[in-house]
Amino acid sequence: MTRLVLLGPPGAGKGTQAARLAETLQVPAISTGDIFRANVREGTELGVTAKRYMDAGEYVPDSVTNAMVADRLSQPDAARGFLLDGYPRTAEQVVELDRVLAAQDAALDRVVEITADTDEVVTRILKRSAEQGRSDDTEDVVRRRLELYTEQTAPLSATYEQRGLLVRVDGMGAVDDVTARLLDAIGVPA
Ligand code: AMP
Image (cartoon, rainbow, N blue to C red; front, side, top):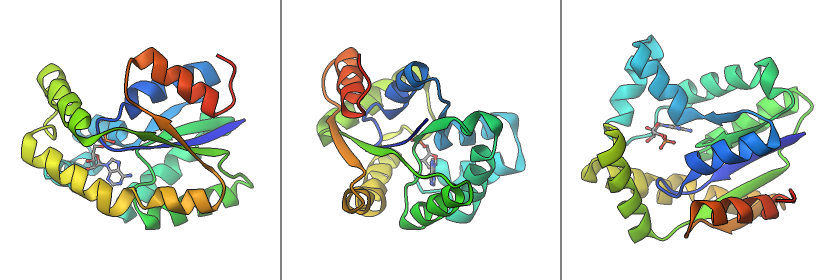
């Protein structure tokens, strides 16, 4: 049973690493950004709401995001564990995640913060923008997303550190090397 949260700035490689860890750990990688993007593609009401915020680099309101995550974590495949990528991002989301897990008699095992320097992160995002054409990877929007991360999300690592749950992993370097460091940090033999 593995319940993990991946923290880290946009462009730190959370999505790539989450997919790899999920495969090894045999638990679903749950990315709130991916769920929002799927809803945008499908033109759902949630997608229409989320797109307004995403395209501006703002956070989708907690009420909307929390309801979506509570629903996702209640799916049967998440009962065996999960890897959250991109959630929680605000103090209120931390409270909601605690509530959802407590209701299932569950708790987080580990919170992994992937660290990356700002220059590298911006380079990676601009490269991704060229490759994938994400509508929120433009320079102004990227700047806003990094600003929000610093203001609202980076402080969450202190919250989890106080709970004794936090491990920090250097996200710089080759993808395979970062994966190996992550597995080591969560105590899984490579
Ligand atoms: P990501 O793919 O994680 O970079 O997320 C892309 C965008 O989706 C973010 O810039 C936000 O607009 C929105 N988003 C994703 N996760 C959250 C969250 N936990 N809270 C609020 N907004 C979110």
